[in-house]
Image (cartoon, rainbow, N blue to C red; front, side, top):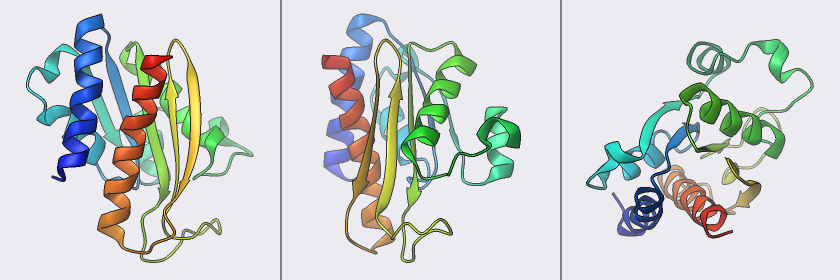
Length: 161
């Protein structure tokens, strides 16, 4: 794993452990990298409650318990959808924080018209934040790393606020 990703996870882990707060993750285009980075930090069981790679509508329903009606009128790879995933992950796990990512890693865009390198990230907890990242690149692996790092940095900002 990229060192910047591990460093971002370590920063978040240190804060969560010090505050005795917990986290649940719902990710899509990052393919589990957010969860893997958090779990690579020793002592992850103190703060990491669970995560899911919500890559399809079927996964959204079976892993998150979100039926089609819950997302009616909402477009995937959008900030409102990312916030819904973050809230749902937090609520489903009884966590202090929920973190989510949804986007298009590449090399092509997604069916919704977003270019490769587009990701929406969200945090839900004592504060809520959402952010859209556009890397401008089509390198799938590089985008997945960028999405995971950006998600962890967004959580770090929420934790600081």
